[in-house]
Length: 424
Ligand code: GUN
Ligand code: FE
Image 1 (cartoon, rainbow, N blue to C red):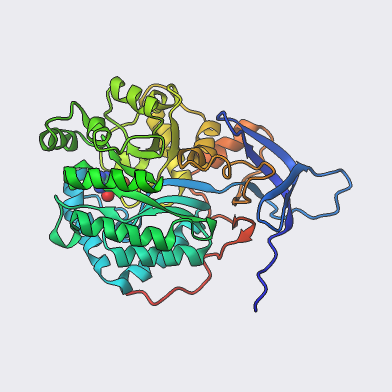
Image 2: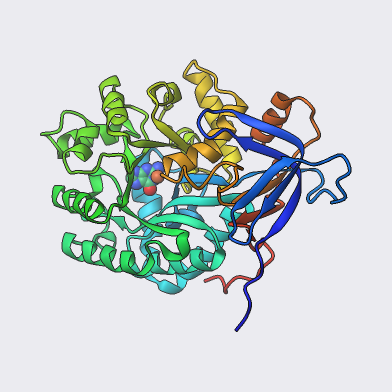
C-alpha cells in the first residue's frame, strides 16, 4: 500500500500569529514553526541566532490560511456579472447559471475550478453554498475531498421563487440532505454538512421549519442570507406577515442559534442585532458583494461591539474575486463609509481567526499555536519593518499575487499547475 507522505516539517520565516481572542496579530520576524506528523502545530518560536535552516519562503510571510465564510460554488463562472440589484441579478444571472448544475459533468468541471481558485488565493477553509442539485453537491464534496481543503457545504434549499428546475420539495430535499450528511459529514475530519436554506424568499415556511429540525437533529451549522437588500426586505415582510422583522422569520423556524451563520446583515435594526447577539449567531461580512450589487454597507461595529463573531466572505459570484485580501480592502472602505474605520490588523484577523471562530472552529483553526491545525497560507510580502506598514501592504495592495504555498493539516495542497478535467 502507498505510504502517505509525512506531514512533519519545520518552516522558517516571517510568521504572523493572530491572537486567539482579540483582533490583534503578533509578528515573529524570523521564526520556526514545527509541524507534527498529525498535521498540528507542535511548536512556534523565534529562530535561534545560529539557526542553520534556510528561510523556507524568502520574501513571504506565513500566516493561518484564509477562511471564506460565504461563497457560492455554482456561481464560479458568473463572477463579475453586473446585472444587480440583488433580486434582478438572481433572476437574470444566477438562476440560469445554477440550472446548468443539473449536469454532473458540468458540475465536476466547475468544482475543480472552484477548489483551484480557493487554493490559489490562500483560502484553506470555506463555508460553501452548494448546488440545489444533490448530485452536483455530491460532486463538489468529492472534489473538496481530493483537494485537501477544509469546508462546510450545504445543498442550497429552495422550494419557491426560482425556476422549477431549481426547486425541490420539502420531503425530497430533507432526504437528499440526509444522504449527503451520511456520506460526507465529518469526512476525513475536514468536511462538514451545513444546512443551507437559501433565504426566506426562496423557502416556504414548511421548508424553513424542516431545515431547522434537520440542523437540530444532527447538531449541524445553518447558513443563510439575512437583510441584504431593501427590496428583499419588503418582499420578505409580505411573504411572512406574522414576523415583526427579517430575523424573526429565521427565529420562528428554529434557524437562529449559536451554530447559525448569517450573510450580509446590512439593514438590521438595533433590536435584531441585540437578538442575534443573544442567540450567539455569527455573521459573514461580504463587503465586495455588497458594493457590487449596491446592497449597502454593513455596520461592522454593530456586530463586533456586541461581541458577535464576524468572518469575511467573498460571496462569489456577487463578490468579484475569490481573494479574501480583496474582501479585506472592501471591508476597510465599508468601515470608512460607516464612520468607524477598521485597521488592516483587525481585518486580517477577521479573515483568518475571525472566520475560524464564526464557523465554530475556534479550537482548531486560525492561530499558530501548538495544538492548532497547521492550515497555512504563504504569501508574498514586502520587507517592511513596522508592523502597521506590513499589515497595510498585506491588506490593501490590490495587485496581490497568488499564494506561494497553501497547507492544510501540514499537507501541501496542489498549486494552479495540476491538470484539471476537460472544460465543458
Ligand atoms: N440572496 C439569496 N441568494 C443569494 C445569492 O446567491 N447571492 C447573494 N449575494 N444574495 C443572495
Ligand atoms: Fe451569498
